[in-house]
Length: 58
Image (cartoon, rainbow, N blue to C red; front, side):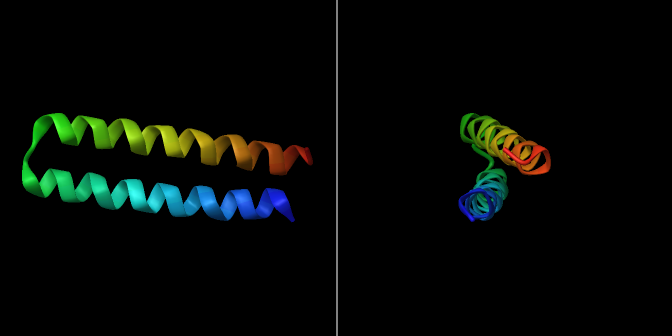
């Protein structure tokens, strides 16, 4: 059950990072926008890692 909870948490992190990315885009702050894009990419990487581990049964 722990892996499924981690997957749920990763999905929440991706949604939160995407919301921050949209918010910073609306503010038109270039540095904050790039930081938000990096955050989205990082959280998607964690999500893919957990999906891969769930698929392989680890």
